[in-house]
Every structure is written in C-alpha cells, then in structure tokens.
Length: 414
Image 1 (tube, rainbow, N blue to C red):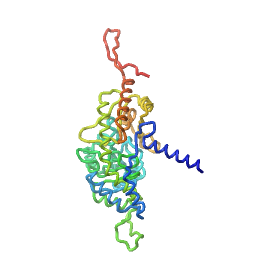
Image 2 (image 1 turned 180 degrees about the vertical axis):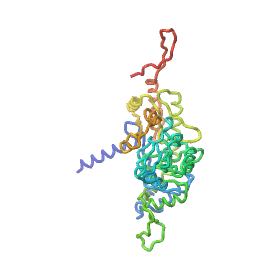
Image 3 (image 1 turned 60 degrees about the horizontal axis):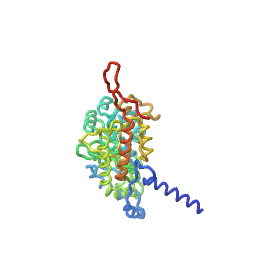
Image 4 (image 1 turned 90 degrees about the vertical axis):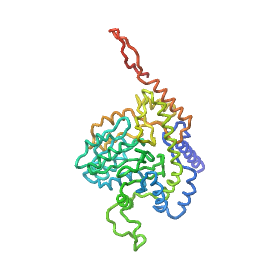
C-alpha cells in the first residue's frame, strides 16, 4: 500500500509540474488560480449552499461593468451560452445560421443541437475573423442568425455585421470565448450585439475552473434566458410548496452556474485586469520583434479595436518545420483549433473557403500569457527570429543568358 501511495504522489507531482509550466517546455497555456481563493471557497463549500445562489448573483453583478452591460447570465460553460443564445434567437429545425469554420467545434455544434443547418462564411486570412462581405452574400430566407468568432481575442467587424443583421431582421451572436476584456471602438465586447458568449474554462485568461456567461442586449432576452437556464422554472416566483415548481411555460436546460464556481470567479476578478495587461504587453513585444520578418508574420490588426491576445497567432512559412524548430527549443506551439468544415459531422455543409484555406495553411499560436518571464519572452523571440533567418525565402541575383539580373527566390535551407 505504501508503494502505491508513493506512486500516486509521484504522478501528482509530475502533473502539477506540467500544468504549472515547471516542466521542460514553456507552456502555451497555464491555469491561473490565486492562493487567496482558498478561504472564500472554503466558506462556500461548508456553507450548506453550493447550488445557484447568492454568489452567482454577485458574480453577475460584478461582471456587468466588464461588459458595460448588466444583462448578464452566469452559466456552467461557454458552449451552454452559445446554445442558449441560439434558443433566444429562436433558431430551430430547418433554419440556417451563418458561421465560421475557423473556430473550436464548440462554436458550431450547438447549431446542430438546435436542428439548424450551417452556412459557412469565409474569413479574412490576416485576422482569422469572419468576412462580413461574404456573410452579406449568403443571407437567405432561412437565415435566422449570424455567428461570429473573435479569433484569439481580436474583435470582428461588428458595425458591419450588426448592420447586416438589422437589415435582414436576424440576430448577431458573438462567440467571445477568446475575448473577455477586448474592446471595439472604445467599448468592451459584450456591449455591441444581440448576444455575446464568454467562456471561463480552465485555461482562459479569466477562469472559474469551468463556466461561462451570456450577455444580452435586450432585458427581455435576459429574463427569458434566466428561466431557460434552469429548465424554464421561475426560481423567484412565490410557491405554495418549497420544492414543487409552478407551471413551466417552455422547456429549458440545466445551464446555470453554481456558487462554488462563482466564488472562484469573484476572486479572479480581483486579478484579471493585471493578468490581461501581461498578455497585451507580451503581444506588444512580439509585434515589435516580428514586424520586419518574412517567414514569421504577425496578423494584421486595426487600431480601432483591442485584442486581449488570449492567443498570439502568427502566420509562418513551412509551418511544420517551424513547429518542430520551436519544440526542439522547448517552446510549446499549436494550431489550437482545426477548421470545422473538415470534420465528418459537418460534411453536409462543406463549401469553398479560400480565406480559410490560406489561413489554416500557415497559422500557429505561440505562448503569450501572464506566466512568461522576460527570459522566456527573449528565448521565444530569438528562436522565432532564428527560424526566420534560416527558412525565409532568400533573394539572390541570378545572371540570365540575356545578361540581365533578376531577383529570384532561392531554395530554402533544409
């Protein structure tokens, strides 16, 4: 028995090192949980009330200023927020939702869960975000909603997308699961569209271990969503029986947050501003270091919006070699999400998407989070610059038989 205990302890320690970034590689993601969470968490766990209660309500109130919007519903995850938004947009069987293939599959699976079809819109290959011009050309009488994703935390063209939605009397749903604290035209994400969906999953810059939030423009949508997140039951109605519900008008879900995760969120809100500052400062270092490179290129962002840089995505020539080069240097990199239209479950909706083709052929993300030290950043930058120097297409002068000189790309180094 003693040897089993020692073995378990060894595994626990190795897992702890991996998750904390104490292992060999610089991690792409790292969980942030402050020590100060332990006391309020202990109080909730021992309080006798661990379901949806006062801590959830308080968390919703404190989230409001982050979105410049008080119509906040705390939920058990970001995917639930997306499905609830679709339900509030009255998306159902046979309807269509215009969406992006360049995202986590969790964005688009809720569309299938509602019985609707997906119409893929192309993306801008230099941001990863949905192309509003392509969206406009794909509206049909069946279209009920547009789903846009703020790739890596960089906001989509919300003015244009909202104008398209308003023109056709449909809803715009923002998948803002990468974009907590991003801004568009000086206002926080969560204050622009019919619905904005956030994730507080473990590796996000703002985490409740698991959780999410749906932010609604309309108070009526928010109140309907409050019912639907708990089976359609009005938990604040006066009941003759403590546990026996009154009439339920429409079916709902078990999507609510609980006080245990909410109290973790309340504690996280004390730190998340500083955490996000680190992401942005690290991204600024990368932007400056990579601006003149040829084989390692930052995405192209406008000045009228700010990204939270949950991911720092770059486009690289010969991505597989780049990933091997970074791995050999002890830096974890990843494409993070595969294009959804390649999955078998979406085979009925495949379309020609040249922007997605271009983006997915080169995109990869490097570590950018709060855990990076100055030494880490310097190492990542130097490693990427070394790759650029070794693998960028080199220009050389080749004398032609005519006697003229012409600039031609040389062969890449192996």
